[in-house]
Structures are given as C-alpha cells and as structure tokens.
Image (cartoon, rainbow, N blue to C red; front, side, top):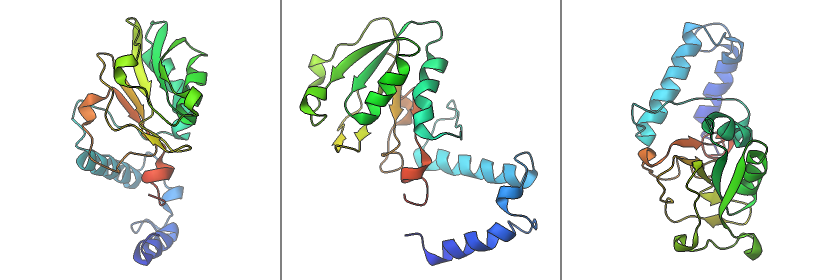
Length: 189
C-alpha cells in the first residue's frame, strides 16, 4: 500500500497541483508546471537506473503491449528479420505482433515445457541478419525468470514490465528497454 501521507498529498493535488489552482490532469502538457513534472520524473528515473546520457527516456501511452509492434516498426530499419527468445506468454505475444512486420527467428523456445525452463544458451540459434534480439527477462504468468542477460552483438531489446526497478541493471547492455508502468513503477510497485 502507498503511505497515507502520499495518498493525502495526491488527494489534495487533484484539486490544486503545486498552487496552480488546477489538477495535474487539467494542465496542458506544454505548460511550465507540467514540463517541470515530466523533467523531474525523467531525472529521477535516470538517477535510479543510472541511465547513460546517450540514452533517451520516453514516457509513452499504451503500456508494454503497444511496444510489441513499435519495436519492429522502429528497429527493423530496412532489415527483414528479428530474433526473439520465446519463453512465455508475454514473449509469445511479442513474437505474434513482430510477425506482422518481419520474419521472426525463434532463438530458443520452451513452449514444449509449458514455458517452465530456459534452454542453455549454447543451444540458442541466432540469425546473422537480425536487426535486433528481443526477450522478456521475467515471464510472470508461469513464473519463469532469466538469471542472466543474453549475450548478443545485436541491439538487445527487453520487455522489463515486471522487473524494471526491482534490481540494479547495466542499462548499457541494452539497445531498448520498455516497460508498462502499472507493475513496478505505478502505485502497485
């Protein structure tokens, strides 16, 4: 649960955010008051995650599932193939969406074990011409979690919806990290 002091502050700010006389929800996204909130949120996230300066931070609508299509749309860059590790229901959905935009090479799949194991990385088959490699570090439906970051020379894309901010990570190992805020970043987290 959120501390009562936090809930009371949020309650008060629903009617008057930072002395503006308006709720934060009523402020223009171009107003100096809202821009200050967005800049603080980015600065705090950069600090907590030690995000390098050469990385962009984007706050987007739609949750992580919308990124299942946005990843190939934005990262293929003329390539025809992407590598995916199929290790649970969330990566299965990511694979399904990516197939709308490119050929998907399944680097490893544990569907035959009902998504309860991960094959040793020595058995994985990466493609030479993939634009990127996508994986889901923590597949929450069955409870499968990677204990190491996959090694690849391609940009590594991670759906960290259920792991972001749960532990320190080296952001520089990744080309793209995306996450839905509702799990670890929102009130539930």
